Length: 100
Image (cartoon, rainbow, N blue to C red; front, side, top):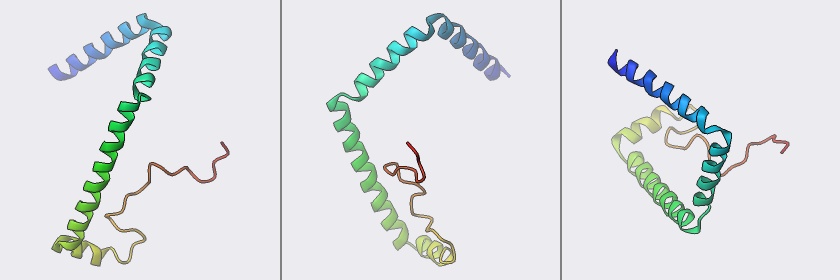
């Protein structure tokens, strides 16, 4: 109960402070965040992190497939349309049927 009360109190304080700051402050924070995100060193770090994540994913996928559990999962998933180790959606692909 105490946790819920603290959460509601924090939510109310955030709402009041946020509404006092207004749309202008929000836009200023948003513009600064966008500027930081577009900085070359941040983009380079994001690229390195993405490459490491992809490498870890590939290594984990290979280890899982070569393990007994992976073999068991592969046998049970042969009747399905996708493997449980394949990503569900790519973040780099554009949605099909888009009119944009």
